[in-house]
Length: 298
Image (cartoon, rainbow, N blue to C red; front, top):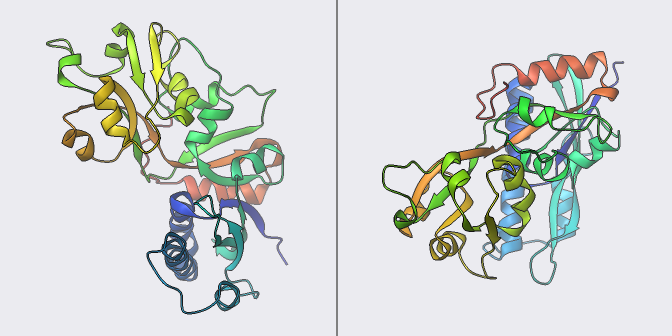
């Protein structure tokens, strides 16, 4: 019997759904059914955790009813970050087949870090985490997979990005109209000439430094939204900022000009090159084939 290829996946959220959707594309109808089942279950459980839905059964009864120990999806409980730290049902594991190869999906809170510690050859996680943790800062910024992988110190980790999955939300440059000099575009060159405050989320400070480059940020001081303050409103107060957006409609509601998409925040397929086997390499190539991603390969 062929040993399954173990793949680390997030336990919940957009990255998990993106990974399941892509695996459904290479795994056929049974993988599609599993992806739909897991996504529907976890969306409901998220609504319960947020108080938007009222569950009819105790959380342990729901956990037992969801879990299929015969290869189907299994779930577990974690403490959520919301006030009171309520218990939340999240993905634990499942087995699918992709082109005849059994694939064991294993839920991890931080799949990228699980690959860094050599637990897996393949995994899915947010590109943001790679930028925040292991991409070296340099005078020039990054805007592609090739750029990101070249900035990873091989002495630090053997993990590289194989491809994005296309579930794109962009880290986008925004500014008030009066901040932009006449005739200039709101892009990386604007930041290179700009001196003053730049409003960002505190968690994205290193990511913004990696994406824009240290040269462009010379003379720029980061500022952060006050607790409870809407990010786009804080950018409007500051004058210039970087924030995640899909369409930019909320930014425009605050009178902001939506500028260059600096880097796509996508779920990515990751590979630990030292742990690669023939089976994991075939799976990686199958997953990465014909993917529409905003993270250019070169």
